[in-house]
Image (cartoon, rainbow, N blue to C red; front, side, top):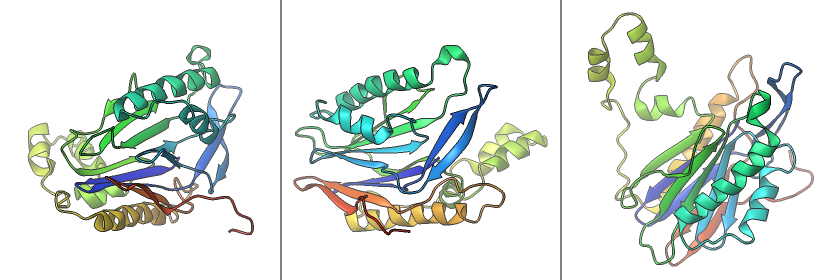
Amino acid sequence: MSICVSVKVPDGLVLGTDSLTRLTRRLPDRQLKTARDYSRSRRLFRVGDSLGIATYGGDFVAPSIETLVTQFCRDADQRRVGGFTNQLFDFMKSRYDQAYPASDGTERPAVGFFVGGYSEGARYVEEWEFSLPDCGKAKSVRNVSKFGLTWRGAVSRLPRLLGGFDPQIPEELSRLGVSKEIVAEVFNGKRELPIAYEGMSIQDALDLTAYLLNTEIGAAAFEPGVAPSCGGPLQMAVIQPNIGWTWINEFGLAIGTE
């Protein structure tokens, strides 16, 4: 799997991902089985000076998401975030459908794309997203004048931390006969961690993003009986008005790394 986190504040956007890629192979029964985990894969991509793409979930076997994103961005119109994301959706969906045809009954891996940045002349960051194979089109994450936190991918601990409870508890209570009205009264947003994004600085947003990524990755490392769902070095960047893209933790090729 893998994860991504974004924090949008008045002065810009922080994007962060892990570096894990899980490759799968088809079994004779058309199910997918994990073939290999790689913990140093590029998951965060710079697009020009004021736009970025974060990916989560699985990966294509050949060519990789990194190759496809690089190929797409060479000629894509980057002036409007929404238009750019719609183009990216069309491009990626056609490649995904070629790699994993729906007609042959093979299980299809989940792959997600989160796009954030400034449209030409815009005051605030826009955030758009789509996932394959289930999403029918790209969609806006939130109103352009609103601020907040977004997480996607192999995330199981952050909902507990930020929401105040395990999301499975309401379902379990309903299964045991507790009415939906009582469950909603007890759990409907009343235990969320209060965070004031409207006055948050870029540095605080950066610290929050790193904290959340490290929390999820750290917990995944101790999960018994299964391979970690996320991991590897953090990839992080900031996008600010009049400044553009700034790498904080940039993925790069090297030798002799652990």
